[in-house]
Length: 621
Image (cartoon, rainbow, N blue to C red):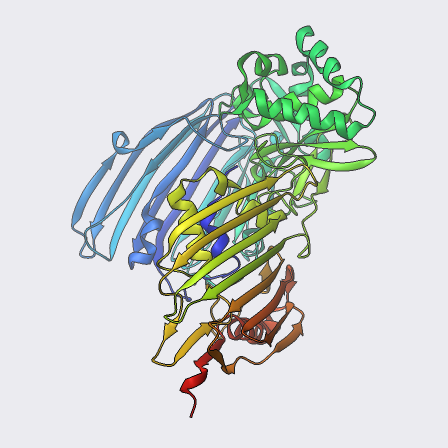
């Protein structure tokens, strides 16, 4: 569960493209014929026109096939704006891989990276997928799957036996689903959705399930690889998963003995849990190998012990089995790393791609992602924080929502001491401690090359030219589940600030230079801030003895529904001390608060881009 390290220097910039149409879906159709509970054929047609370079990614094709499914035909063609054929695409042109990180994928992923020498251009894809060992999900209707995509014509047609009791759910879409019956005891569901304008890209957009239009379809009963089930309630859904893994929890006697030797002398459940978690981290690794029926059934715990690897399901089931052996209550749990909320009134397999475990230890609930043992025990990373999950419990499977770290948990404390010389050069001492989500964005830094460490330090301090960099990184994953990473650095720079003959122009802070004003004035959606945080910075300037303050930024203090900020500067002899504090709150805010958000960000920019001008004392007349 690695993250991009350098995301840490641009937290919450919230930038998106301005509203525009980058591509037009000229014609899109899905025609699915379900023959019975085990056989289904789906035909897909997509013609899309790319209007500019920002829309090129819409031309790419990616789709996955579960075990038992087959790509029976594929063709494509790329045409320029006049209709001239640039290239024909064959099935052999598709890239094919067995690798996937998804919980519910078992089979192949096909992709095609589409490029054209000219813009605009049009690409058309036609393909057919057959499934012959049962299925748990029907194709969903999601033509407008991203902002900046306009829909000219789209349709969906499903034919299915009545006995499978097909259901559907509309999300963020206003369209008619026309249902009819055929003479051979089947039902048809049809949708036409045409002439739809592009969704605007906006800063701080909500989660996709809040605005992307989609119609989900699901059967009430199903049979998959000879495992029947029902989808009437989430309890039914969980019972099917429980039965899949019920016989795959047996541990070898050798491991059972080892677990008891490790934990029987512990007096607290948490100590036992920690020992087993560390054992998992030291003896297994994550490998995406979805064995079992269609990627839903985990490898047996005994097989994980023997091989030392497994996918998310296998490792979660393994950890769950080990905890049960030593008497710690735990539950296999499935979740999505993409979708935050589950509909309570519609049960479907479409919403999941990951497995974790819920643990009750010392009467407290913890959530553990067994694919990320490099994180502190019980750390709730951003891909699952605040997400709904289905806890699998015999006869009582149910939805629970994982907690999120608060803005005060997501703390970053930075201390910068800058000793200036008369030419504007400086010796810089840097110490930064980051917790919770801010820890998550930086914890891989210790594994980076010295070059990348230097890039991070210099980007954080906004120092383009530095010399003699010394870096020390310490991680604390044991004190609490939020974790802490401490980064210390010392470096010299011959050009820290702008200078003139008599003056130096000092930034109030070298930190947080990534913030910018919010430019656009149009808001159509509510404001969504996924993760709040708190940055507390202390910057100390030690001036050459013959310099004094000529002018400096004024103190700032402000609070609104989105957060609060403060900046204060004190001067004593030749020492300037700046203390700044910014808190951003997470949450969903009404769109009519957008002007207030713009004002708040303008004040943030003002606080972080202020200047201090110092002048040589003998240069004053």
